[in-house]
Image (tube, rainbow, N blue to C red; front, side, top):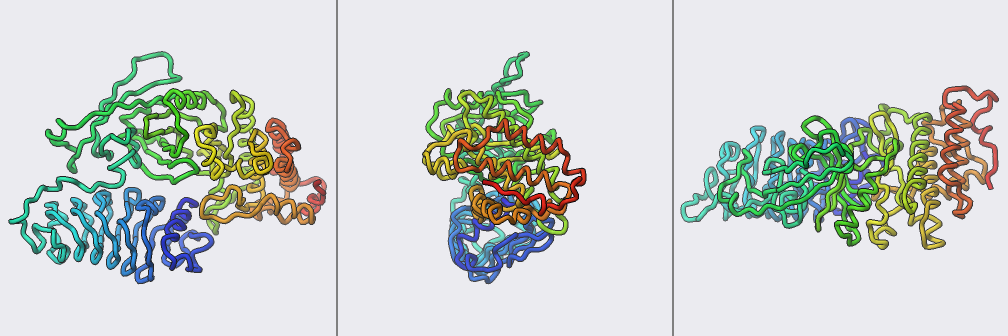
Length: 585
């Protein structure tokens, strides 16, 4: 998965040794193996990072740097020189072995460790970790070493932690209690008066998608007290509001808050507005759901939540927005919610507070177009056939035509790229992240949005519908060639100057060689591929005035589909290289 490779590349940035490691290039997984040193894979997913004695020296700035490696089971950095805080494992729930022994880690041990129900071995000895030990109580834990740190407080009296002998706790001067070597007789101990919680417990909602202001208190799915004030029954289902009171309660493992805490906690009311009928999805279901990180995009982080009824919801947490009042934000979100098209990912609802802006969507089961084109290379890859690529091209074109034709004021998408085209369970293309361009300051948009890399912006200093047409042309080239465009490549992945490269190919008359080998074998698709390439070339014309409207593009793509080149032999008997003998000016 691309998100996994991005996580590994981000991790690599912290260590000069890895930056010069020649094997850490190219695809990170090859089905059930990896060419990357220290990486193990199964079914094209990373399952182990094993880099002991690897001379790694550097600081981990982001505790969630490996959050997208959700299939990770083994993590070993034994005997290196890694410093900074411990990693956060709220999304790595399949971990069985963690070994950071003999490094230079400092800071607390995050509480997320206690939710790793498969954890068998935890080796954190010979570091500089401080604070208290989380109340680990998973029955799976059979090996533990926390010695030679700066841990303090009383060893929690859980069955798991009490089962280890004192060697697991040696040389922590501030640590006391059984089974450690230092009794707590002369130390006034509060049993975890101030828990060092996971990153997600101290701030804005993340893993469990609890919607609250920055002043709201601590939440995890097991530590929530919720009262839902349901709206009055109405025949109108187009828009609903749910008002929720969250109580930030410190809880024990059974999810029970103390009476004292109940008395002092302040309740914070926040409203979530749903802009369409969401089929029984409510906040109570969301708060009980399991959560998983999907990764960061241009303007926010997305998470998926599996509801009790097995429905999957995605929450996108927007960041770095322009200053917007509640009324302005609500107006724009309602406008997005009113958009209805089979090839647009529909907005389900939104949340606004001073410190949190959240959007709700359905989950697209088959990932995104970028992963479908470029991911899973290997013998077990399911081919991305010509007919499927043509269908995606058609769906995206229809969505863009709808946006240009139906949006008041004709607001361009601004960030059309293959990672922003999702695929549902039937492989229907769904364009996402539309209508957001006005939410972000121009200085940020210039750095991150595809449209600002177009010839239009470079020459004229503005973007328009024709900029979207250019982006669509780049997308078609990606579909046809199987190459990653430098204009739209995700962070950490190198791309090709695809527009320049394709013009050179046409000019030098080696057009047949530009097509992805996966579709080049489909001889009956030759004419359709050439025609779609011609559409792409017209879309990436340097002059916006020479580019077609999206409505015209839709009709041309539909003409290719009607010709049915993907199922019938070319009646002329010519191969693709012959059919490609044309010039484009």
